[in-house]
Each structure stands twice: as C-alpha cells, then as structure tokens.
Length: 127
Image (tube, rainbow, N blue to C red; front, side):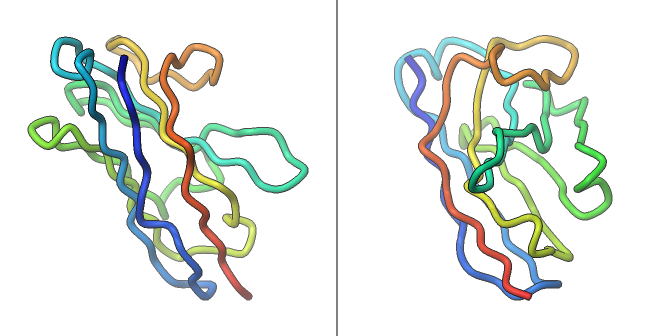
C-alpha cells in the first residue's frame, strides 16, 4: 500500500504562483518504483489529467492548458513529487490530486490506470 498526501494548495490571485507537494509513505513505497501524475477536478467537472512524470524523472508531460506554466518534478530520496504552478488563472481553480502507478518508461494520463490517490488539496485562483 502507498499513501499519498498532497499539500501546498491555497488561495492566490490570478498571475500568482503555488507549489504543490505530494509525499508518499507506506511499505510499498519503499519497495517499488512509481510513476506519478497530477490531476485536478473543478466543481461540476470530471477529473482531468494535468501533468505526469516517470519514476526516473527522465520523462514529463503536460496538458496543453498548463504547458509552459506548470512544472512537475520529483525527489525520490524524499519520496516526493512537486508541481510548480505559475501564471495561475481562475480556470486553474480545482482540487488537485496526485496519483501513483507502477513505473513505465512513458507518462500515463488515464486516471483509471493509477492505483493510489491522495485526498487532494484545494487551489483557488481569484480574478
């Protein structure tokens, strides 16, 4: 089992920045390698993929809506994944979730393929 805990959300004005963190714990997190993705869900909308990173960190990918503004990174020694968000827009307002799945050489985008999910952190961007 892997437990994921997100942090770093909050209220920010449009154009501002936030840094989200996702910390992994649990016995399985010590034994296995995981790819990680960030997803978000706004009220009344489906959960959508935002960004992903492979276990090694060698591959990253972003949804077009955040490309150039968000950066995903990881520190495996700290069992943490980060999402740097800049030039935030009101449409970025959502609950942000991190999710993990077994390592592959490619970045996974499909929510159903992730095994472990955090409880989310709220990001609110005011106009």
